Image (cartoon, rainbow, N blue to C red; front, top):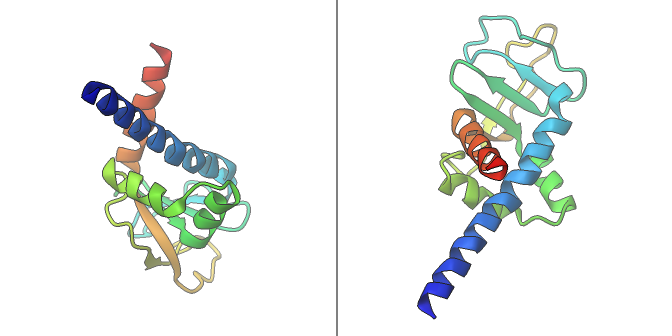
Length: 142
């Protein structure tokens, strides 16, 4: 009996990860044209300018993926995915060091931008997030 409970709990944890990672991956994929890739110091020019409203900033030198909090929250809510629980899952797998949003300028260093006012954002550890997504994909192919 106890062994069955442990197995069910482990399955539900895996399911929670999937329920959190899937919409995040979809959000990133759907906003690839709304992403700027630029080092954190802003000294280098962006690898590619965003072609729409800026929602994601990726800094390869720090492996940080900074995502506009309101946009991400809205994406999860419209898909009926519990956003707060998803943040906790991201923290548990090491992809979101701090579940609190922070104030960041997504456009800092972007050519021709006025840099805009800081916006509330979530700062993901992109290296850890990528490792989790890759290990999940590898498991599916075995």
